[in-house]
Each structure stands twice: as structure tokens, then as C-alpha cells.
Image (tube, rainbow, N blue to C red; front, side, top):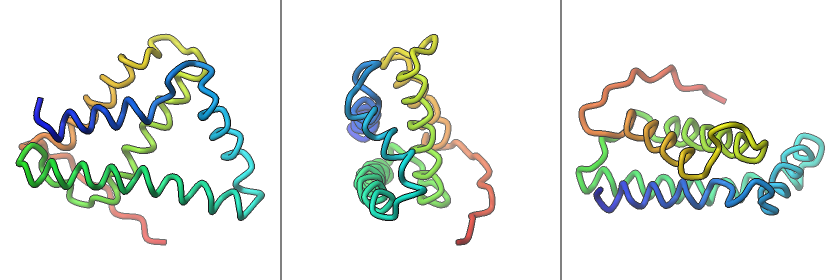
Length: 131
């Protein structure tokens, strides 16, 4: 596995909850519930999420530069999809759903990343949302 692929795998491992009752993820979920009703909480969550997105963008850029990743047609759309996937997998883990080990969920996320980022993979992009 090349440096960028390993870095992406580590990013996923760090993003997903460490355990079923991961206190930082429980706090994150409670903040999500408050965000639609509180502009300060919403802004704070956006700032935190932007840090994760920035790291993901840097990993993808490194992978493209190394030739390990095919450049996504729209990087912002890829990062939005991938973070949403990780959020959904995190919820699976927090809810004690079947097959929710961190290792298995990391493998699922890596499969999704390889589907989009492996050189030669061509996935049609939906029209980018404006607004």
C-alpha cells in the first residue's frame, strides 16, 4: 500500500469512533442535534468539519501527486460524499449494529475510496449542487 493509501486508511481509522460509547462521538451527535437551532453550535461544527475536510483534501492531493489516486472530477463533491459515508459508518458503530467493528468499517470505507480514487476507475459524477 502506498503512502497516500495508508494515510487515507489512517484518516478513516481516526475519524471513526474508537469504541461503541466513544465520548467524543456522543458529544458530536448531541451537537448535531442542536446545530439546526443554534447558529453558534452550527458554526462551531462547520469549523471542526472543515478541519477534517482539509486533511482529506490534502491526502487526496498527495495521492494524485504520487500517481496513486486518480483525480476526482470534482474534489469538493468527493470529500462531501466520503465524509458523509464516514458519518454513516460511525453511526452504525455507535448503534452496535452488526458488522460494526472499526476494522470492518475501515475496510468498507477503503473499498469506497478505491472505487473512486484508484487510477482507471471512472464513476460518473452527478451534477454539482449550487448553493
